[in-house]
Length: 388
Image 1 (cartoon, rainbow, N blue to C red):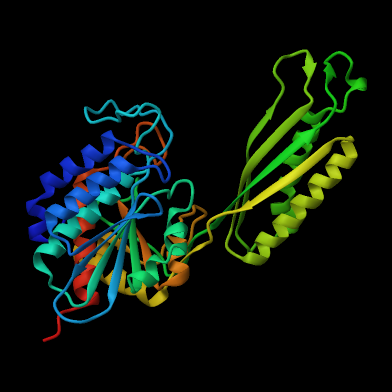
Image 2 (image 1 turned 90 degrees about the vertical axis):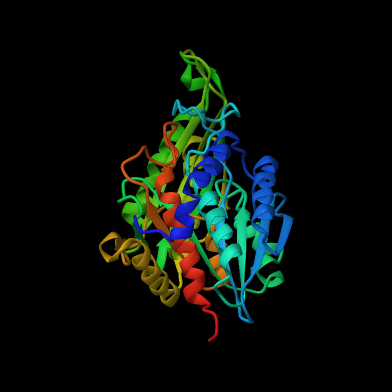
């Protein structure tokens, strides 16, 4: 896999960084050990500024280039997931019940590799803002960093990010201009009935039946209320009720996710869910409350910046290993908050035939870290070349 020669020189060290991070997974915004490791490496590299404590444990580091110019932002997330690890690796998680099951340890390593190279060579104009972000999995850390004024504070003009992709050719890239990933919302339905003996259902108001009917009715929103040409996913992912076989419980709960691209579709779903919950509650003579949480917005790549990023990816990986218009998908990503405010692009980098994301036996492919670092480095050099 073609990489920048200097970055290839410290590929072994990058593997060591990544595996150290893999051992110390932390969740959400509470990532002090991870942040301390990142800051220590940045100091070793000789970056010009290190700003800590953004979104609690986030970091923005600045590297000055040769001459005046704009600031380009490169982002890596570094939080983990609440999943017990099952890789059996000798560098497996030392924090029980937590693991890097999405490869954010690898994302951070790729950006650290680019940081070391850019701090050494400075073959660009303007500045690079290295954005190390917590709470991508839960909490919307990107949105919090934006709300705290990061983009304006550091005068960031454009932003880019990478995510590893199991099942795609190792070191290859893919993305698409425009809408890439969906907006993601959550819904919670709390149902209160009247419990009682399982042998005497006539004396109860069964919340279990109400929950089942609500879950089934939610699925008709996709098939009967939404235009087939508008992407929409509604998934009920949890139903909880009862404690034993001979008692009809008093309460039930269901929860799930909604994925959309069009705000009109999102509003339609919210209204239909409200109507369904109210109607089913009346039908079964139970109380029911819908709590609908609007989450990450859709990830929308800037068309021109995406085409540019694809050109850089082709330079690194070769044209036959880069797909520039793969279409959109229903996953979600909080980098969307940065792309709402600044033009840029989000790309996937293949990591080969490995376990899937968010699985207990997943592990990042260390071989692709120098490729991702090379992409980030060349992106900066080409976007902001040194004036001659």
